[in-house]
Image 1: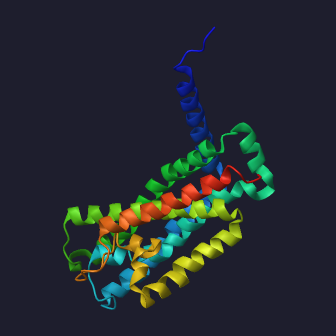
Image 2 (image 1 turned 90 degrees about the horizontal axis):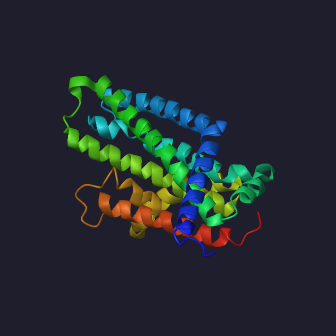
Image 3 (image 1 turned 30 degrees about the vertical axis):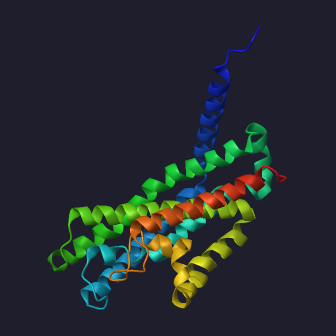
Length: 257
């Protein structure tokens, strides 16, 4: 008897759906996921209060609720970097990855499902984190805030949310590449908080790197024709993320668990 031609695609689709469901379940049930996201939100609100207080005293040089309310994202992004690393490195602790690969032997499907599950979780979390800062600043500044349109606020929040989500996925790819939580976190935080800022001060080429290009998605440099636009920044950061994930997938199929 010949096989039904349409059965294979359905089987592959079913495997992908089961893989996504399994990875989503693991990520949601991981206590570190909620501790990291909750801690990031709290830290972001504390920093927002500090920046808003400075804004009320005139120390920030701006009364824009979006600029002040999102200033803390430069620091709060550390939580999303850590989340990305934990999502891919946690299974290597104690060798749980072997059990995962026995259940899902198609490594490309498994890694893709892990990144998709992470995106599903991190997108709403990133939006809540970004919006909470803006709402808190707007309510505190009140009528003293610089007027902005709702369209501007929406564009900025979309940019921040996309930036945090892509940064998390990029961090997850680095975590899968390094496969050691502490080492991956040190490398990424060292880049985002030390190497990246130094390169921005030293060379124009830094605008094509993931952190600088990502910042342009929500905090573009005004009156600078050579600066990266929000759209270009989004494309650059997306390209960096895709390339890193592709590199990991190529190696992941050959590495020992």
